[in-house]
Length: 317
Image (cartoon, rainbow, N blue to C red):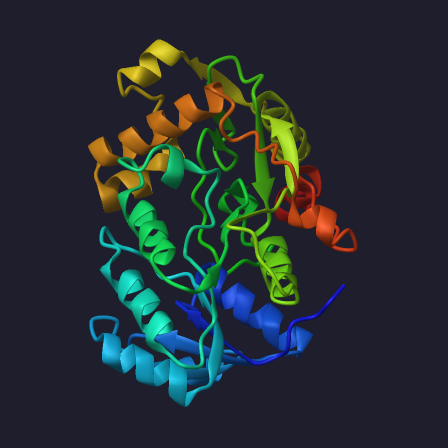
């Protein structure tokens, strides 16, 4: 395999979440110089980060271009949160196109499946990012990895990504399965996504889409695995409900206790729209990723964590 020349990689949004995990993995690998782009410097942040922090203004394309050029950034990995607007990332893409140093870009997609392409109205920000990239001469690839396993973790298994459980509420021994629960979904641990992204930098050419498959399970099997772990702790079996396709199409979902924090932060109506739409995608087998090729095929030495292993490490005492 031909290896691309090692240069400087910038992680936009690398102060937390997936971006921080990718930065940590890059530093451990040691092949590339790494910088982290952030909006502001806070107390002790520099000491907590694995790489040098560069403060940038995402509203200023010239500032971003200068940051890329002065740090000799050849590759950008973006994990910034859109917060309802794609402008910050579109500005970064324009800056990368303007930069004489920058040639490759991984956008902040990292989605369950290709919904930014198939359903652009639902994923407006991600769709706009892909449209902006298509206008450039940059080499780019969008990563699709299924759902993050880390959304279902506990504090026992450390992660830079906050919990965001959908349909399976392990803490409260409950589940609300879309449809029959027989449909399969792909879930990938965030650390495994980071490992594949780091190795992706070794490739001299990128496809427009890159796929990572951590594990593939039905929701029914997911609930059974979680229940096995929890029963060993509390002796309590899961209370399971089923939301029909008709209920989900009407925007109705079973309100699990774990949703309360999201309802408070985002609003109940918008949250229920997200849950119901994702449930419909599951019923329609959209999250059962089966691409022609995957990064797992290219890098067979990377062994992804299975969901059962993840649940055991997260929840079994």
